[in-house]
Image 1 (tube, rainbow, N blue to C red):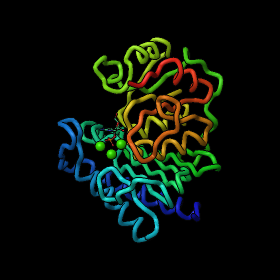
Image 2: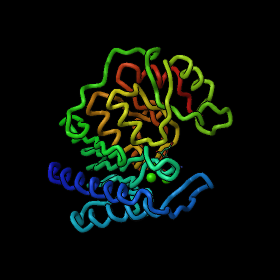
Image 3: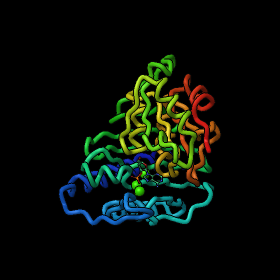
Length: 265
Ligand code: 2AM
Ligand code: CA
Ligand code: CA
Ligand code: CA
């Protein structure tokens, strides 16, 4: 793959799609629900994914598209070049807040994350990485994330769902212990932005129990470029084809979090 060429093209499409969303942010929304009443999708999610699928297919006919809203291909493996696309990550924020959402695109070649792009649309902040070439925020290099900060002085992003006893995926007691150990927690409602904030050093970690490949594909490439570690909640390799738990942190605390606090059900 001509990584620089594909990266330039992808970046320009992301900025174009983001501008379209910004320009239409006050237009009435067509909102539908998916798996349940709180699982929202809008026409803008669908239009944006269709925009990427059309551009990718006409420019790179051999590449495949793996997207949340169904305009891509039926992807079950990562052979060849696959664009993993979340047209709007944080749809609930998009609907309720008209901010705090992102476009997320990860481009993988034979399972290796080569390009990551996360665009905070309303803030006009673009996080990018090409594997082996560092991560950037609006074109400025991001430094390696701090290596020596202990868990007791760390801030993690964490959804309160995982503190509820009845959740299906993780032992809540372990997560409560984690909350007690940490300095504090935050919850932003956009997995892609939560990855970007860890890469930027605003957060020290992001732990969550149920994400899809399009939530994490770009964030993994970006965070790994600044020395972060990204795995499933049990420390195993993160799946880029199936739903997974996620532990994404600075390197020095990753093992401690996975082994000491996250007990998957
Ligand atoms: P979305 O807005 O693209 O759906 C909110 O905590 C985060 O979880 C967002 O990144 C959101 O992405 C994602 N999310 C929402 N519903 C989800 C689901 N059913 N499975 C996996 N991720 C989900
Ligand atoms: Ca969704
Ligand atoms: Ca998402
Ligand atoms: Ca989405």
